[in-house]
Length: 336
Image (cartoon, rainbow, N blue to C red; front, side):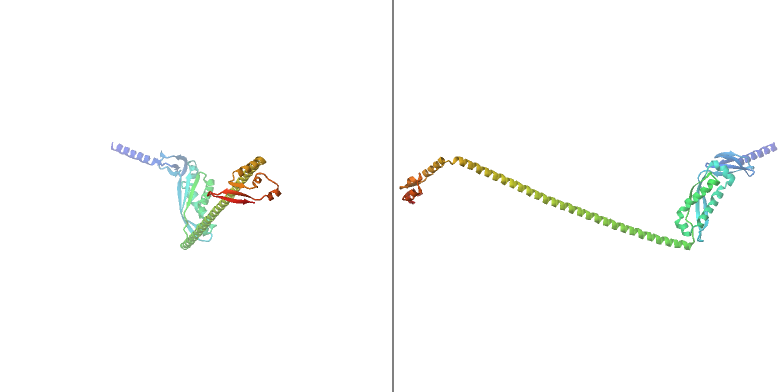
């Protein structure tokens, strides 16, 4: 009985060990490839728990989501012979699940070392070899990321179509200390120059603004003066027009008055012509003599009423008239 229990215990332990080595877990975002006797199997496992034959079969997980590979301390020699180092280069890539088997079969599960790391070294050295330090460090540095990404993707389209490069980030390269200080001084001088240029632009802009403002003010004053001048001219013209109208009114009024006077005189003359007949004049003369306060006496009294020949009249002796003054006394006058 003791032997049977020992055998059972050993059997259970062996089964547990086999189960422990045969059951494995695949994390989300990864797949598993299997090797048996060193040969890659075509089976690919998705995330979850899976079983395999222990000791004979082994597995490797491969990430099929976005991952970032870092290539550190990449040496690079420029065309001028200066050795620089890129401290860190990050390559964001994505392996499609359908291409896992082909890529692992051709480049192993560590495919990124062959397809990315080595290619980054090669492309950077080619880039540095045809450019000088100033171009690599300053002028063309902003183009390294895009150029490196395009070069990697172009080769991967031929060698591993299922591997896509999403982005490449390159840090500023390390250069010798003396050269770095010179570049810092140069950048400081360049910064000062840019500041001076910007200050000059600001001053010129302010001067231009002031000039435009003065021009606008001058135009405004000129326009106001022009308006005032035109207004004065209009006022003078209005006064002149008013004077002309008043003159016309005065002339018309004088003409009307003259015409009225002329008409009145004309009508009066016509009336007098009709009125002053010889009989009317004789009547008026008689009334005038009758209303006279003087008293005539002498031989010439009839001559005042009836006209006689001039020769006879001259021979008549003068008559005497008596008139009463205002104080009641009478006065005598000789008439020739």
